[in-house]
Image (tube, rainbow, N blue to C red):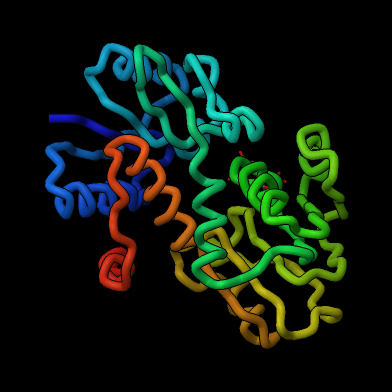
Length: 264
Ligand code: ATR
């Protein structure tokens, strides 16, 4: 029986096992998928188990998406560009790091029928998932990408990776079509101190957080007359791409699956 895992710390909240096991069963694939909390000094040994095929692959979540890179043999071009790996596979003797967060974000927006082309995007936060979001937005031809982060230096550092982006200081709200919360604010019911006085209606408020399903950030967007969306579809589609890489099967994404996941 093949074995897959998601590694992270903390990991308790992860819905990945529920999703992957659902698809494994649906596709009659003889494999298991579990979550495992690791400390940083346990990463190398864990990845070695994939190399010797005790384990067949893994997803990687916060805070290890960059830390795993030195232990891999190859990176996909997207993982290389973003320096972020969320999926590890093993092919022809090589450990390969992939980034399926990019595709997950793009597919989620496609499903919403939201066209990023020529739109001005404001990203709040500069943590682990932000390079993937910038990469996807750039690919979808956003006209302007602005990053605002509490620790301004982290936003500035992203310019070395993506020289087209702009930065503004935390609290500043330039004109935008779509605003993305990529901070951890909202996971525990926190509010984001946004000056909403110049934000008109008809925007898209997008939160990478999906649990809770409606953060205070999304509530603000709703109140301002904007479309809102949480990170559930992005989560589902990053898993979809990982599943396809490992099992060479495209799993189903439908309302029944979304309802099944919403029970948490
Ligand atoms: P990491 O920064 O380790 O990659 P992350 O969960 O991916 O972790 O990112 C957390 C994001 O939420 C960061 O952008 C962080 O801002 P800082 O870079 O200033 O730490 C942001 N964040 C967390 N708590 C915050 C708070 N109280 N106010 C504003 N931003 C906050």
